[in-house]
Image (cartoon, rainbow, N blue to C red; front, side, top):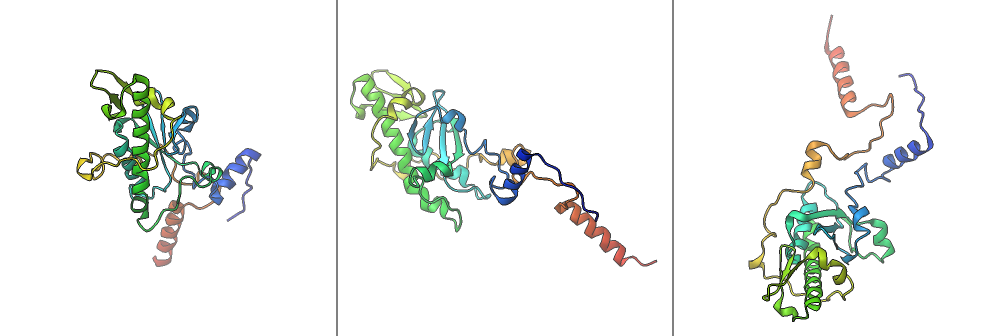
Length: 243
């Protein structure tokens, strides 16, 4: 095959070489890594959870989605204890740079051996429970009522007096409170999300190809799996055909 000249500007070259070397996480669209443009402007309740004013709940995921459903399953662990509105949950991948800057705050970020759920379930449930307690405490302080009299469900905090508010309205105040070290976890018999199979967050992007799941670098003259297969088939056909 005749060599072909590869031309690229400086920016294009850097992007493509980074993709080839893994620097762009195999071409995964980083918009999924950080709903963060908005989340960064919203105080985090804990390092795992950001709640935006419209009640969107951003749950950070520190493990990789490799087809096993962990991107959804790990979010369920947090949301179960948080008592948030599942329809408003938006998981995002935890920022590796943030992880390092904050002394590896997300713990293990490795994925393999079916460890994502098994090793994460306790501390992720506690993350959700801690955030719930902080949100309820913030509302109780605002109303001047005992925390024990307040309840939380589907991102709404209520009091027998008729007062109610939302997680989105309380998130900023809650973020200023101390994170409970040993929050009370729900009894498994009361679980509503854990053990169920909601629609997975990753499937729509995969089936519609709305997010790239491979390096997007395409060089003229380079073989792709499809073209290699076609060439192999054609060559095999010629080799087995006799005049």
